[in-house]
Image 1 (spheres, rainbow, N blue to C red):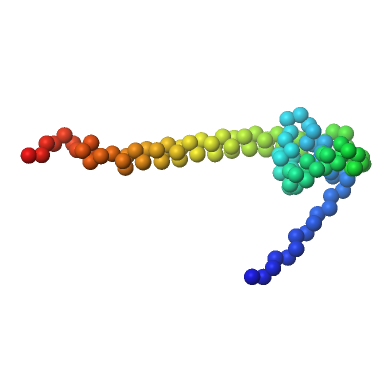
Image 2 (image 1 turned 180 degrees about the vertical axis):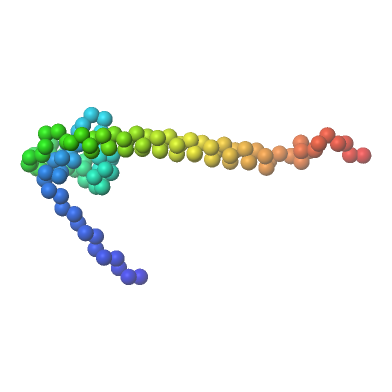
Length: 119
């Protein structure tokens, strides 16, 4: 089997990291949502947050992020919640269908007669 090409390692500037960290600290923002919006792994963003806290990442980032990304991230969070709810409902429906079909298959032949008596 042929080997796949080595993965490209992306390097991000300190300004990008600081902006991502500040986005993740906004009220109501989740690390995984910000990471998904920026197309990075949530663990990487968590590591950047630790690095900023401990002073390993320094730089100048805008004080407040532009209103567009925050609004988009909030909309993305709402969509993710709705999607999770739909997935949960779907799982419940699948269980209900399975339960009904098992119940129907286990009925005894005597309970399926239409009331006729055999002579």
